[in-house]
Amino acid sequence: MSQPRNPTEVVAKARECFKKGLTKSLKQRRTNLKNYLNFINENQEAIIQTNYDDLRQHREEVRLQIGLVVAHVEVTLDNLTKWVKPESKPKRWVDALDGLYVYKDPLGVVLVVGTWNVTLLTLAPVVGAIAGGNCVVIKPSHNSPSFGQLLETVLPRYLDPDCFPVFVADIDATTKLLQERFDYLYYTGATTVGRLIHQAANKHLTPVTLQLGGKNPVYIDESADLFLTSRRLMWGKTWNSGQICLSPDYVLCTKSTQDKLIKYCKVALDHFHNQDPHCCPIVNDFHFKRLQNLLSGLEIAIGGRVDPLDNHIEPTIATNVSPEHPIMKEEVFGPILPIVPIDGYKEAVDFVNKREKPLALYIYTMKKSIGDYFLENTSSGSVVVNDNLTQLITESLPFGGVGYIGMGRYKGKDGFDTFVHKKAVLVKTTCPIVEKLHELRYRPFVPYKLGVVEFFYKYRKGISWGWLVYVGIFLLGCAVGLLLFYFAHGIWEELPPKYLNT
Image (cartoon, rainbow, N blue to C red; front, side, top):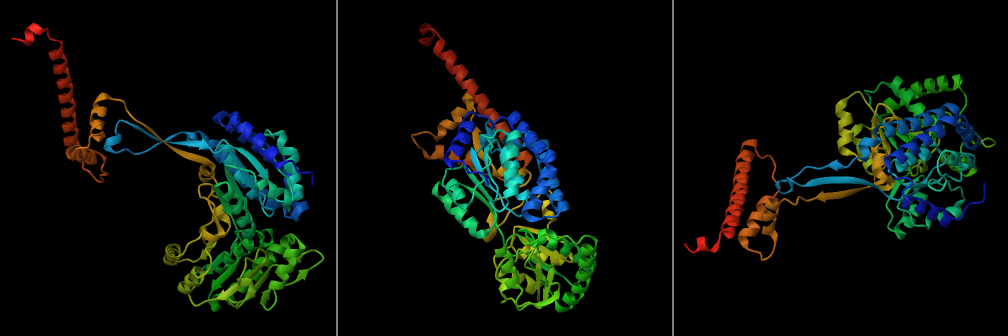
């Protein structure tokens, strides 16, 4: 790891670039996004290799992540002109001749702190920050040194390193970086670190987005297609060996469904790993030992073998798991899937609601009524019916948590909105007739004046067009009357004195 730069200097340079407007114009944003896209496309093999060096992650899993980021950039480029434009807002009578807009201002200098386990979650948030017109300090995880080194050495060839510096550092240097004042903080990772990020943000009242971990429940109904369910579930659970925040964490189903599911999951795993036995190891010794301890006391139905020399844990399914077992007290974040037997979908909903809100909730059922029951009676960052992980693929859906497992959103339009300030703008008309009506709000206050003001400022819903026509005719008559009054008053004042005395 290279010697980290002085965080104060890094932030100061970025702020100076922002003040000069080097990232604000639509043209500059589009240019920066295109350069960022070129960096990703032209360095795909290097990104794949660094992920293998850091995590021994399967190249196809990394390619999928890269493809998602590329799609994220392309969607943003296609829609940025529309997103940047001020939005017109609905008007009341009192605003009829005014301009009501929402402008999207860049926030300034933002910090994106990435995570080690998924390249996507470091690269993707930067897209929204660039699209928003900000300068971005990019902080890759110290647990992904090869990927961080790639960003630090190669990204400056595509983006201005003063506007978009890459800050590669250990925990101590990162702590110093967090003491600097940013206009926004974005973090993906563990809840314990998320708390520290939030505390650092509080010092300067800096807004934050936190994408944290949690236990993602899976409910499998008796009506579910178990062949399809097992294949999709095993794909999601073994992706990056379960080391992803959206990974299915535990299964809720009846005992009869559990017994059938085990058979299908074994077939799916045999098919997956006979064709391609590669499965990445656990990231470090600490997490390997943690997962190894969680296996203690479980009724293993599939897998369970571990290799301490390689930090490898075989995809494992445990049955009849007690809610009091230690594996149900923390996020698994590994290739172990406990199944907790329950009596039905209502008990499953109660089980989920008694615990912290999950980042994702997965429901496998062929009955729409059961899916609707979960949607109406649970709260989670996202819900997927009859699949898992794939909510990341759809650009029009936001990604984010709720409650204990995070705050804020990103991806697509939501990613752009995260990194801009929506500024309310009201452009009042200077029409003399309208100003005459506005004079009613000025002192001295008289009851009848306030009554008229209340009438015009009052919110009205469902007013018929016919009634509006009558009101429009009345207002037009008032306007014509005022004009005639001023016209007549003006002529009277201009008459010679001799006519006034006759």
